Length: 371
Image (cartoon, rainbow, N blue to C red):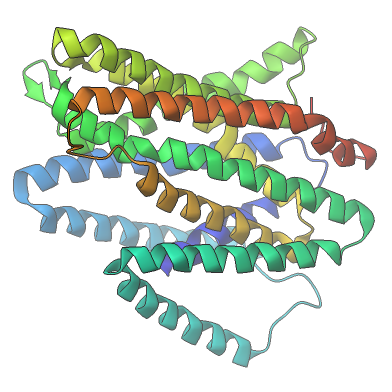
């Protein structure tokens, strides 16, 4: 419930700070994303070390303290966002609607707790809710006027490709973490990094590479090379695919040489971080850019539900452990190869769709240059 209330709203809130033609929107969301990953790096690294040394109870205490610090920070700084954190004129909801929403959220918590013990049923629930949300979103889109409708259809298509991205991307927390635990030499200057802490390398890569990528676009533009937003989105899928293809090659070579070097894992997270930098903050920025203000929360909710569905799908696609009759490394190699091809295949489909996607964006004055 907390995650659902927080993620969509904080992203939609940031989008309200920019006019439609403001070129600072995408860089602003990149800076926002860097801030998120400061917490990802500190949280995953610290929690992994504390959990291994003192137990998971203390790791959860640290997580709770982190949320408390975040809440205090927001309350102190809320005055900075007050002019933007109200519904658009004419869309204020009555008090009874807030109460009804609170009851619905509590019911959602109870249902989620129940579904955690019934994973097959959880999959069906996600499918049914997802089809319902997608269907209602399409109906909302079709009721809009021509230019707005076309832009929302572009958002719907980008949301679909985000499912492909996140379903493959999230293997870093499942399949890649298991691979690191079992088949990677994690010793660094006499210290063995906990396998759970290797996930912090993704945030570290993102923090190091984000400023460089942000500087890359103006540098290219000064030399006459303009990479549009949708082209960058496509490149995010390309970097994702290359990251997993690299791991597939690493597994193939380490099968004979023993455990893989941590250097390969660092390189994997570098490529994965590039994919995330290219696609994730841009996806948030495009969501707030494409959706009209009165539908910003709805569109952002669709974006994050797509992420949720992709995470469930990631569990379905994860490397099966203990596959009978197959060497463990062979299973990793085959699945990492499929993940890589999935990312590149998604990039190819998006590349083919670009002529259709960028047309409604260019037709409207001030539209996004699609590249």
